[in-house]
Image (cartoon, rainbow, N blue to C red):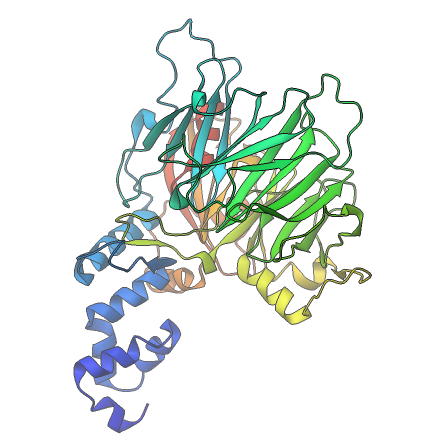
Length: 497
């Protein structure tokens, strides 16, 4: 920046600096005293820096948060960052346990099914067949609010066909998908509805139903269809379709707005998967060779049913251990409400459970770098690009290995934005409490912590074996919660971090 540029009027100089990356702003502070004081004191520049440090993006626009001055935004953002770094969260009390549990003991609940829903944010769904309703629980929209949000949806608004095999929702898109099997257990009808008006089709959907059936199926008999791992990203929804929730299974990707199936692949073994972005899926086949496969799904609708055997993955990444399972995830997207800021989707991370005592945290930027560097382009006859673990993983991922005397559930850890909350407890301890540790892979948060280290009684990095890891990260103490298998599972699945 030239000397003449520094002489520009204050407001003009601020507008120019707002176009810079945060790293450039820190560099500008080293140029001269005026730029140092400007970057260090201007509320707009400070808000931009605080957003990056906290892994957030501003939710702007007249329909989202009108009239909220930047001074108030900055104040709330700093309060949010302080709560995360100090581990001081507001207690929502019984709302994190399940508040809609029946008060009457005689009310049947043996057939209830509870699971998280992954979309623009993570929600919690309980299907109650005998009560003919669906209960939904979601974290508060405003940062720091204590109360969870709850809804009850009547199943009488849907045709009485067969059993409910899957329920999915995305609050930011006002999307509710309820999947039912046909009476003969041969097909599944997924009803695309408005969440706020569940009796009506979603106004953005071209058709009210997505109909599908397994690619490979013997005589149905008494076997029931199952739909699991349902996730969405923008107008794309994906799921696993299987018989009785067992092998084999079909992974399918649909454009729920147009009603077209974009991609389908049949697996002879059990798999788990998640969206990477609008073009790629990450799949972990649960077989003896431990690896992660990246598939590209066609963005254009297919005119005919997919020949699953022709579908090949474009990238195969070796993993450090067997029994790998990639966790479903939500790609952050700000809701149409009064939220001021929201987790940055570019900072998102993915969790791979490696057995019961180890997990792997992978930043989205690692996948993007590999795909762009290798320039993978799928063709019907092309072989996938294969990379051994040693050539890509040790410096680009974070592995958590908890001491054996501690216990933790790797399959209950779900990331959101740049953070993931994990819980553990000492099996030899008589304390009923459980420790929550928050791992943050935002590099700017790590840089900020070097100047303002968090006040923690112990270093969680030592317990999880990440104190010598190459990938920059933070390990912060979260709140202590009561050690209960059910309570811990619920908290880990819907923790609003």
